Image (tube, rainbow, N blue to C red; front, top):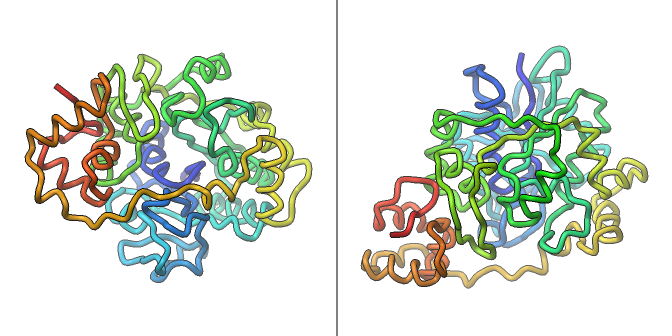
Length: 355
């Protein structure tokens, strides 16, 4: 018997969710992690959340839920890092498909939780950065919909649920100070190096920034960090994993409350609701964002280490660390060049430390 962990926002959240699972529970069994297949445009140019029909090679878990395997592939033109995460993380990754609407999503989560434990188990939502506690009006807010949908769906299951905020502020959407004010009374857990080590293989290549920032903070990194789109500060609060009751998280999130009250029948209606409350459409931003230029992998072969490091240092604008995604983008590389870039620059930590 075990808990079901839900990676609140998709993308790179399964990495941080595994670290959280290793922190919350000492059970050595692979964590059961449910996640959206909803990734950045450079990974998935189709932008929206992917469903079962977008993959080949999904396998069925004991309860019938679709799960990722190393041999799973996204059907082109869609793309996904989840098959490779299934290969490199000691976790069972289950696909959440929100395309059929809120009630169907709640049913998926309930069935997965029942599969995890005969009694129905406990659901543990993990959000890296903390925008799951949005009030809907923060100036840096850009992607509140997926998290709100997760909160509402978990509420509708009726199962005991805890929300865990990892690394407050590290997704660059809500500042750390505001989030800590919303987490008053939450006694944080602090992951150890062993929890990060469990995700090390995936952290070595995945373009996730929030999970990498949290992992680096756990390992002791502090100070100013440059990521794609944000300059952030790693502080003594950054390594924390802050638990709070589901009802408290829903109380902060106006989109989640409205989803619960209005019960929209389709994903599009749910996204329209998000737009009405926050000015941010749950689906349109994914289509509106322009991905970076399509650069073939392998450009790193023409780089000199000293010249590359100097260019990254200049672009970092005084920050002591940068994410590997930022470094790759600065050097005109594809995210798939991250492992080679690590080798070129001699980096074996979640962030690149600058001299």
